[in-house]
Structure formats: C-alpha cells, structure tokens
Amino acid sequence: MYIFDRHCQCIYYHDWHRGHTGKNAFDQHGDPLASHASAGGGGGGSTTTTTTMTDPRQGMNMSLEEEGKLVYGVVYSLRNLVKKLGRSNQDGFIAYKTSHYKLHYFETLTGLKFVLNSDPGVESLQQALRQIYTQLYVEHVIKNPLANATLTNGTMNPETMGAEGFRDGVDRFVRSLTMFDTL
Image (cartoon, rainbow, N blue to C red; front, top):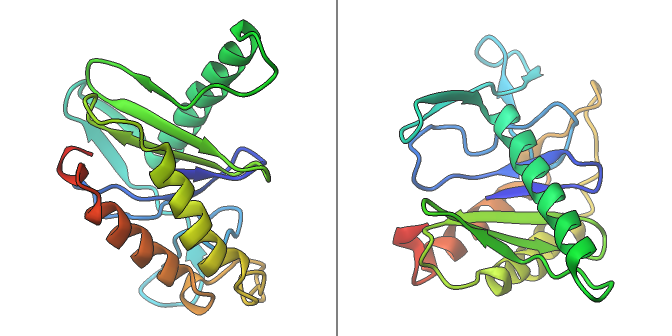
C-alpha cells in the first residue's frame, strides 16, 4: 500500500507479501508517516531507507523510492486519461487490472492518494481504502496534535507522534479483510 501526498511524494508504504523488511521507506521529506532508520546504530540522525527489491516475475531491481515514483506516474497518467475520455468532469478512476495484479485507488478531497495492489480477482477495495483514510489516517495522523512537531534537524519522528498507531491500525485492518491472502 502506498499513500501519496498532494505534492506527489510517497509518504507511506507497507507491503504484506513481498518479503523485504522495510515497511515504510520514505523519509526524505520529513513526513510523519515515513520511516526513520538511525544512522550508525542510534546516533539520532535519520536516513532514507534504500531497500532494493527484486520483482520475482521480472527479475527487476528497483529501490522503493523508484517504485513509488513509478506507481505515482502510472496512477497520475491513468487518472488523467480516464478524466479526458470520460463524459463528465468527475474522476472515474478507481482501479485497473493486469494479468498479475489489480491496483485499487482512492483520492481524498485534500489530494491524498491511497493505492493498494492486490490479486487480479479481488473485488474493488476502494471502500476499504476510504475506511483506512477516515478511520485510521484521520484519527491517528490528522487529529494528532504532535503530527506537525519537528525535531531540530527538521525531520519528523514517527515514534513520538502516533504514526505507529496508524501503521498498526492499517496492518490489523488489511489483515482482517477477507481477501488478505490474495493481496
């Protein structure tokens, strides 16, 4: 699952089945949901997690940051295509499916974009993404008064602002979905 802010930055990433260890891989913009790995075993500084993954189907190596950019580009392009081909001004893009996966999409009025990949046979997860936003993101991030607190170096510390509650809530919620084993 990816969450992109209105500035096209991936602010949250979580993977349940691919096997790499980094749950949240984007830290460069000081976002409250981004991962903070300490440099040199606890010096207090934060660094961007640059986990590289291998796609077993294609043998392709790509950093999580590159994958985030690629996913955002696909979503942006398809969303614009659907808007231009559609008969109304309303955004009609909610998912697309390939032979290997289905990408589910939900965008908030504030420009947050929630993206979740699943097995191609899974029904629409747009309502589940909406629930993640309204019940978890709003409660644990937006309503959290510490979410905008910054450290001296200008980066956020998710451990002190409730983002852990968001991460844990998302994990529990997605695992509770009946189609979790196919995500």
